[in-house]
Amino acid sequence: MFLYRIISAGNRQHTLLWSLLPVPLDFTGLSALFNRVISCFASLIDNFLGKKKIIWGLFLLVALNPGLTEARVHGGLVLMFDDGYANWLTAVAPELARVGGVATAYVTLNNIRSEKLTYEDLRNLQNHYGWEIGTHTNHHFNPQEFVKRKGLSAWTSQELVSAIRELRTQGLKIDNLSFPFDATTPEVQAAVVQHLESFRRPEPLALGSAVREDGSIPGTEISLANYVPLGLIKKWIDLAHNQDRLLFLYGHQVLPDADFVTGTVEAASPHTLTATEDIKAPPGADLYLVPDTSKRSLGGPIRVVGVAGKQIQVGRGDLRHLTKPGATFMIGPGYGLRWSDFRALVDYAAPRVKFYTVHQVVRGQWYKN
Ligand SMILES: [Zn+2]
Image 1 (cartoon, rainbow, N blue to C red):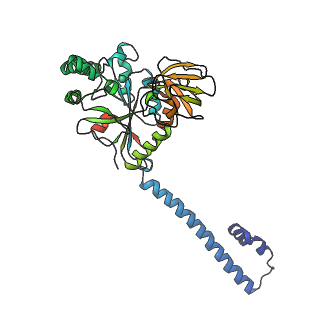
Image 2: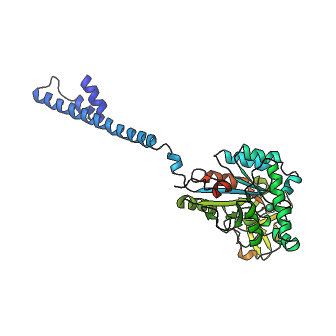
Image 3: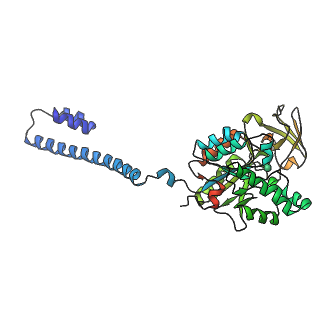
């Protein structure tokens, strides 16, 4: 019975066979039974050892490679936000913190004066969430035009140095800058690098690994006015991951999905898009159009001048080349990034790349394999 149990447990398909054996057994029968029992034991032990090998292998893999998850993370994502909004602190930073992510926030004093956010918000971002606060100048004037009108030294003292001083007085470490409207000249850039570590230069696909010789770091805008489909951003993240490089993206506000409206294109004429259904325009006066959400907007922002019934009127461009019947369009705030897209971006990036601030990049404090 004991043997029978072992045999049947070890090799169930032979159970029937063994149950048919005559009892009592003769010598040949006993010898055959003995051999079978031995082979059964051997197979049990083999089986056990096989499983043990797998378990042991898994144990070694984990024990010898404590950074198993980190090892799969290559390259980085440098997220930057411009201007200054209260929901950087209330929504964006907590969302990033969920995956251990950080960002760099370039703030203009204009947005503090107009109470879009406070110095206390910025200190919280810096001290609690590990964000970097940079400057986006004092009054958000177009630097190129300002210098033309009043000269470089006026811009440097009134727009650059005064902003840095004020922010530092408020307990913020200011090391980097982004230009309002990305409007700059080589002389303005040279003035900035006298006072700070870097300035941002817009590029169509901003991949890099360090600050450049001229003191610039690259940046690709992903706000609605310069729309990049989520699928393309994911490919860029893969690229940064595979090449162990840094992807630099910037936006302004991350806004609720309700602030954006999508629909299906029925027809397009040069300045009019006709939808398949009536369009309920989202709130906010400053609306822009993405004629086809499967494509990147490379021709510059397309401002919406009117929405009525099924039609959207735009001020520029030729929509016939930018969309087609059946495509999905979107309208929303030009400086907005849709919340669900932002969340998807963060979720896609987190297991693949690490998040860095601009200051960490300039100082070479990023993990490179
Ligand atoms: Zn700005």
